[in-house]
Length: 166
View 1 (cartoon, rainbow, N blue to C red):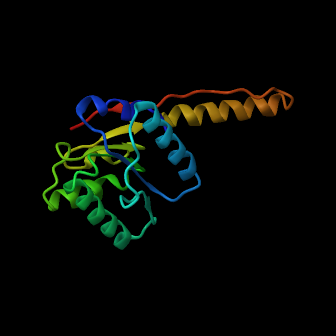
View 2: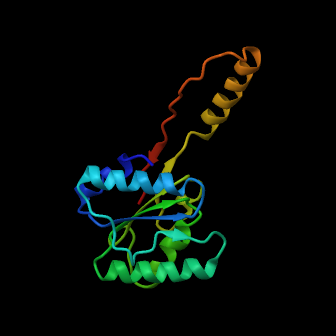
């Protein structure tokens, strides 16, 4: 997970940033990136009672975690959250708002994938991976490998875009 989306928040007074994610194969890497970003920014991780892992397709779990987040926000233990992936963004914004939490005033939200983030009310800032470029690069690499099986491996960086919204 890139550091730069969180790097804007300390300048806005955001000091208690959580990571909310599904428990997927990439979750351990996301956790490491989150921890590295906090360290680089001189921030402490959220307390353990602030939820981070979500059960996929379990709305009851999401409801429980949103309630815990609302309590953490109102108690001053949380003021920003990174969300992976943005299928969580809409309920993460609407449920706390129903409890009186204002986004982005009380809770700043940045999500990864940026497929649904613009549909939230208010629209949520999203990190958008370059999907078309990833697909094109994969096909190009496959074709080159088929033409030359001995071709050396190489590293390709495709940077995501940060779409700042309300």
